[in-house]
Length: 125
Length: 125
Length: 125
Length: 125
Image 1 (cartoon, rainbow over the protein chains, first blue to last red):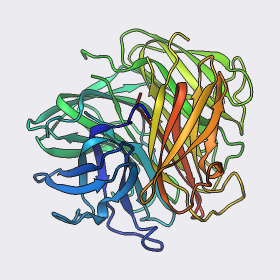
Image 2 (cartoon, chains in turn brown, green, yellow, orange; image 1 turned 60 degrees about the horizontal axis):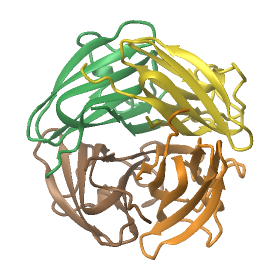
Image 3 (spheres, rainbow over the protein chains, first blue to last red; image 1 turned 90 degrees about the horizontal axis):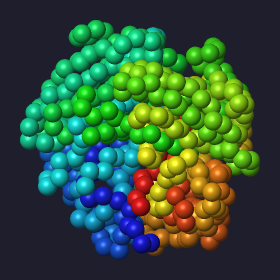
């Protein structure tokens, strides 16, 4: 590929992990996912910072997306430096050492039937 | 962060607050949300203008998103200068004094199971 | 507003009007909508062209979005030059005389509970 | 049209074909679709490469979108060089010989009522 798709900074303004789930775990647990694609030939060192409405940002959460790999990160599994709070509005900024592509998905299983949403994150630099 | 993600003008062409809701209030009330992220180190002074199909625009609705904070604004809670009408198509333009990121979400609970939609708003300047 | 948000050419690659609906008409009829926002001070003369998988494009469908107005266009109500076929994949290109913003929404009511999708269209020029 | 909308490289970071479906086949089978619009006057030669979390990319899958046509590609029907695995996270990069527009849709019918998601893919070049 002549053009490696992506950007080095992404933002997801919408974030919310519901407190309750229905259905079999873990596939049907309510979750928010950031899908990261690194189509380049270098490993991507990724830093995620979370923003809240009523306190200072937390982070960075650090992870690696190897060269030519995708990684679907569940926000409800991020634990270091702190577990992502449930039932709380948040937003996230994702920075990478190489261009990546980020898409945001939420599965909401609070009611019997699931709702899905997805959107490409906002590329900023 | 070297790059503050965002833009100063955003547009959401799709807006509609259903008249009826099912489920426990307020979490399951039908609502439209504009999720605003201000990852900069300055407070963002935000002005929202609403557009309709059959009358002149109304606004601005004014609010502040503090530095390094996110704020999830429910359109059905905007009341000054006027309450946002139910059952009416509208669109919105969001202007900010510093770059922010805007994402648009709707929870539609007119029927027993909820529908969710979300998309990044259109960045214009 | 110093910047009028928008673009003059937009594309929606995903289009499909289901053949069947459930629920009360017309609010719950399956439909695809293009939400158009004209935040400028000039009327927007809009031309919509539909593309198919197996025949030449049809159009233009012509409509006006007045200055400072939004208009939510249901594809299943477009009739001139031809009614939009049901149960058929299509795509659309939307051209405007002034910058507008376009968002795409579908309500799918083939099953008992509705599904909603929405995304900002692709701005091309 | 003076401007042909589109880009030559697109990325979809979110990909997942559920293993189970409910409802009548094939319209209600769980599927992921890439909707491709070629509004130009030249045929588009398209190459799709799939990325995974735990193995090297596969592809290219090759297909043609004729001039002035749209084509809605179901990932679960891609078979050459290999069938797309079920129940596995993946991402995709779509390259075209002429500018096209790509939109990503998923129908998830694992539960009784369907969930739909859609978003414009990320244009990269």
